[in-house]
Amino acid sequence: KNQVEQSPQSLIILEGKNCTLQCNYTVSPFSNLRWYKQDTGRGPVSLTIMTFSENTKSNGRYTATLDADTKQSSLHITASQLSDSASYICVVSDRGSTLGRLYFGRGTQLTVWP
Amino acid sequence: EADIYQTPRYLVIGTGKKITLECSQTMGHDKMYWYQQDPGMELHLIHYSYGVNSTEKGDLSSESTVSRIRTEHFPLTLESARPSHTSQYLCASSGTTDTQYFGPGTRLTVL
Image 1 (cartoon, helix red, strand yellow):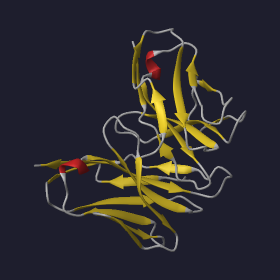
Image 2 (cartoon, helix red, strand yellow; image 1 turned 135 degrees about the horizontal axis):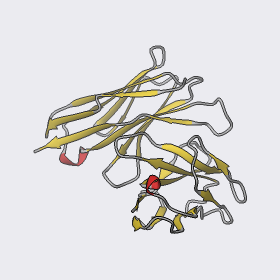
Image 3 (spheres, chains in turn purple, blue; image 1 turned 90 degrees about the horizontal axis):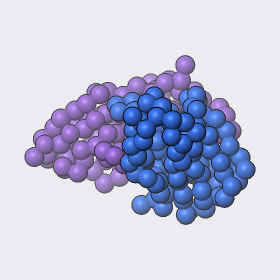
Image 4 (tube, helix red, strand yellow; image 1 turned 60 degrees about the horizontal axis):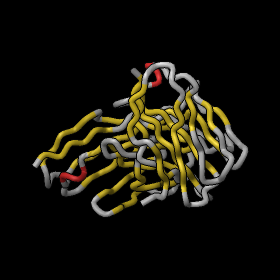
C-alpha cells in the first residue's frame, strides 16, 4: 500500500533554533517528492521538489534531502522565524497512472515561539 | 503567489441546503482538483478534471458533484448538505508539470 508517514506529528521550537522534519514513504513507482508549507486556514504552498537523482535541494532557510534507496526525506529549517509556524506536508508523486497520483502525509505542525 | 481563488472562504449552513463552492484559476491550467481535508489529517482527492467537459471521481468517495464548462472554473456542488460534510475543501490546479497550486480553501460547517 502506498503511504507517506511524517514525524514528529507536532514540534515546538524557540525562534532562531534549527529543526528537522522527517518523511518516510512506500510509494512505488516513485516520480518526485515535494515539501509543502500550509499556514493555518490557507492552502499548501510548494517549498521544494526533488526527483529520484537529487539528494539535496535548498530554498532559502529550507533544505530538503532525499534518500531514494531508503525512501526517506527530511526538511531542515535553519534559524527559525515566527512566520515558520505552519504545517509542513510531505507529498510523493508516482507515475503509475496517467494522473501522476499524489500521496499526502498528514503533516508536521511546527510552532515557533518567541 | 498562485492565481487560484476560492469562494466563499467560510460557510456555515443548515442541513439539507444546496451549496456550491467556487474555484477559479487564471493560469490557463488544464488540470484541476478538489481535495477534502479534516484537521490534522492528510488531503484526500475527491474530484479532478483533465480539461473542459472532463470530470473524474477521486480516491475518497464524496456525495458532491463537479462540472468543468470553462477551463478556468471548477465548481463543486452539494445537493443536500449534512453535518458529515463539515470539512475544509481545497481546490488546486496544475499545468504542464505536476506541481499543484492550491487555493486558500473553503471551510464548510453544516449544522
